Image (tube, rainbow, N blue to C red; front, side, top):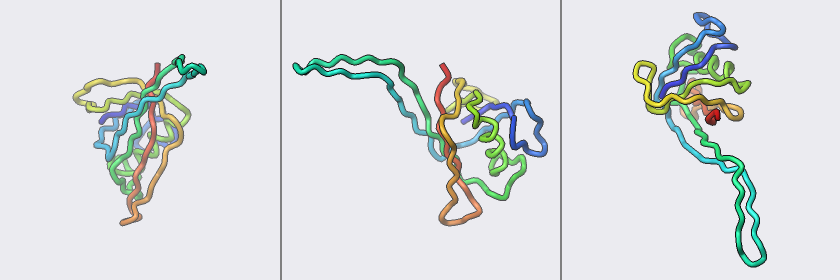
Length: 139
């Protein structure tokens, strides 16, 4: 999985603001969902009239456990993810490629984060945390 974002906030010491960075990783989970917004009217006789205003494709992404104390440029560490989340938490657009990497893109699409991210501490070892966030396609 590949993410390309512009660093804006909570910068790693070796990163520069407004520079784009690549984040290649294997997720623990990437669940796709389709959301429909619209109305459904049903008559007394049983006929149904559906008006679809829009549909959205969303993904719920969860990382593999990240080392909390690793605030370096190591992608397996928590610091890089803190930078990414802080740089996209105001709905900034970034590129997401479910099956590609920075070296070998597959189908990069423009997305935004949708809602807050969650940080779950491992029950087995508090030195690790899993980050989960939702993204939606930009239309």
